[in-house]
Length: 312
Ligand code: FUB
Image 1 (cartoon, rainbow, N blue to C red):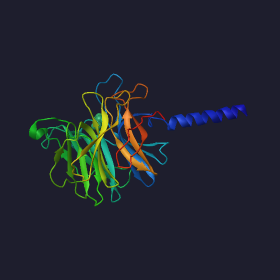
Image 2: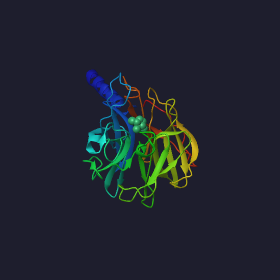
Image 3: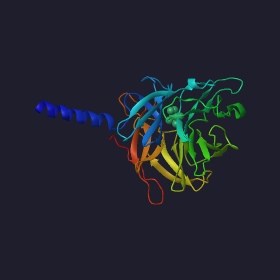
Image 4: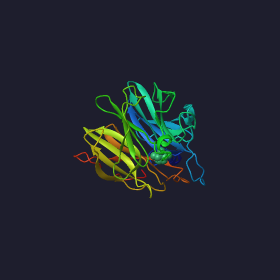
């Protein structure tokens, strides 16, 4: 009886500690979380850090998909997309976001363009499509959706990273992205073409990693800030998807052991969740990051309370 009791205790301990603590993914290093809710399930799209402990840059070969029905146990569906899927792309799999539209799943990714007759290289945004949240995904347009303006203004080769897309109530999709400055463009309802000009906006302290969404009639632009020192998460709100954006403050301070952090926000079964990454796994760091999740809370006026980072 004692043996059985101890074995049960051990099982409960292992289950609790394997599945219910931050980081929520611990068998590989993951970054740049992008959650959606579909069919009572949270699907989590992530980057994948494979740099060695001594590396001083990213090594991000592919994007993974995870799912959970209870926010406690997470199933790894594997590396379902990589820059190799895009014939025009080369290099790392930077931040991405997948959203559903009319029963199809559009995975907007930031990666890098080959130097060819179309582009001189630099960051670029592509879009993959699938009939299922877990693939198979293929290049939706056979070319980049956004090509780096380095070809035009010879500036910043990697400012076109980190796409976030949200669908307004009238079915119009908007995409925001950027590093250094934030840009947005309206997309056509087919999700794979831009509709009108690209506009540059400057939310206070914006660096990268925007996450755009609408809640109770208010538009939110949440993003990584700072840049010359470890990133924090700050945000603006607006009554329109095109701004003006009113700065609301910091919602997440620095994270342990990682220069970057990256927001991903979702409501599921009546609770709001804030996904981010840090470097807290053993041998983790800025290029070996891990995705975490904590509750987030709104005030009655729609402002967001500071995120309390937990290890639970
Ligand atoms: O993961 C690579 C880059 O680091 C992302 O694109 C940024 O948002 C930052 O997290």
